[in-house]
Amino acid sequence: MSTSTRVHRLENGIRLATISMPHMASVSMGLWAGGGSRHERPREHGMAHFVEHMLFKGTSDRSAEEISRHIESLGASIDGFTVEDHTAYQVKGPSEKFGRLFEVLSDLYLNPCFDPAEIDSEKQVIREEIAMVHDQPSQYLEDLISEAAWGREHPLGRSITGTEESLESFRRADVETFHQRIYRGRHTVVSVAGNIDHDEVADVVAARLGSLAPGEALACEPAPPPHPQHRFHEDGGQEQAHVALSFRNVDRHDPARYPQKLLNVILGENMSSRLFQVIREQRGLCYEVQSDLISFSDVGALQIYLALSPGNLSEALRSISGILDDLRQRGVTSTELEEAKSYVIGQNRISLENTSAQMMWAGESLLYFDDWIDPDHAHRMLESVTLEDIREAARVAFDPDTLCSAIIGPADSRSQLAQWLGR
Image (tube, rainbow, N blue to C red; front, side, top):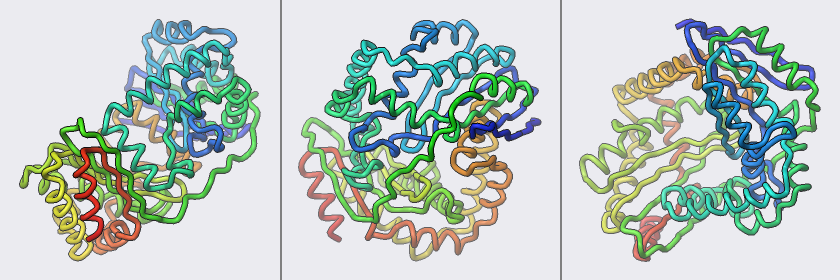
């Protein structure tokens, strides 16, 4: 596979990355706004997600139906998502249709009409989305553990979707103000991967987005200091308890992110991990258990999730304690470390055979690091991690003074978790 990545910057601050993959028939393009729920002001809770929805509801030239019809009639698909620190809009389609596809994508990014009737209609859609999240314990748990880890009053601790009350307060002027603050040149990244030519893509992007105002720098509230907090949602109708544990971790710029990534793989990212093998396979205490590493510009978290019968909760928590203590005190074996390296690097190389993954890699590189990060460089950094690095990573990661928790389940689940936390 042959790829060639080039980075270009427009005068208004827009950053463009192109990844030429001449062997592919497709093109994947991403248009990213470097602002998400973390950049909301207190009265804007849920606004980043709401604006993402509204951009699909029509522009000055296209209705919502015309946006989807134009994209799909060209053999392509379109979607968007909002997270804490950015919002993304993505299209994948035939490479020869790039110009026409980017015209639609850039139109919705630049020219949303924010029709008041559509605003009211979309509020109801998101109310249904909020209700759906609350009906699905595994999703609702994500909101609860964020609230516990960062606090109710911090943007990182608030749900990305907002609440019914915050949605109700949104007016057209509020939506326009947020869009005008966030969707500006210095916060915008364009990433295009596939059978494309860099110069042709750069010309199209400049023609469509070159007049976008640069905008002002975005500020966000710093991460709060660690403060162990715990959230419980009693649900007697649940046959299972859903539990999340969160420890503070390093930010995405810290060199220690490489050993922390490998530590997370060994702990609970795949089926060979200690959590999966001990708690699920050997002891049969649960069906689902995993760990995840989250990182932002100034802070991170390592989180453990499990769903199980409440009767197995105490034993599962004791097993987790044993695994974490062993990682802190003894570290990992050389076999575990080498297998984790092989897994991460191999999975990354396989995914980058896809235009969508190349587009995501380049887009996130520009958003997070203001430059393209060569995947081979990341692989070399992973290869350089030592057993001592992993032992230190475990010592930092599993600090009980930073432990937060959340649980959804029947009442006795709470007492079992409280007893474990007390120990």
